[in-house]
Image (spheres, one colour):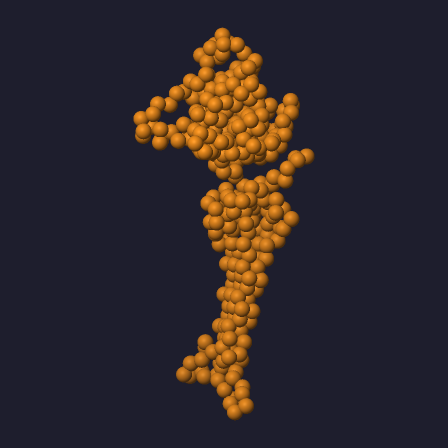
Length: 344
């Protein structure tokens, strides 16, 4: 069982408010026994909104509130008084949340920017009071409109983490250890596969008070795109990362082959991931000598790479430099700076 309260998928039932009924009241006062119509309009029903909040990082709060129901508008009354509008409901979610229709699977919207608000369900309009229907030929209408009915919908909310760098690798590749070294995050670390059962986020401090966000995604195995292991559940979190950091242990039998497997699983899940910038970190490099490192370097994928060791801190500074340069590659290119692909 996961130790944290990370929830990235919920299904909720939403219903907006019904519009209030219009009033069919007639003016009746002491010296005006047969006054004309003075019924007011009904109030509108409450809307339901989805709003992003950068202070949230999980959908846990919605796990225990599966029914979001707005209140109905009040009916109109005498003296042309309009009924009170129903109370709106706002569903607060983390930035990066996507909404789908639970019945049809139809995409509804996504909220990625803080405070961005989207109308999910519209409250019913209030009915017109009989005053509205008064005409020269019908000066005493005895009817009024009912309010419009409410809308209801079952909605699936999925969270896709927003991070600058996403860690991609097989189980036990050292992703959580790296995150604990370069950020203040404290993920669970142990010497067995699938230690990480949910994504972890951390802020990497860089030079001159600059920083970027790194996400540790649970390990991927061959066949994850087809539902094997636990990688499929979390592959969607990689979609929003600006840069992918592939992590493969230096003592692996074939680093190039393992990279191809990881790349294949990502592109099978979402072909758009093939176009994302990527960097390769060969982890646990404290286990190999310079001669073996040189031999490994001759057969690596054609992407920027760096040898690192989280235990000895070897290559960590170089890795941060490389990640920062790749995240700002266009800026560095415009200023004429050269990107070094081989940092050793």
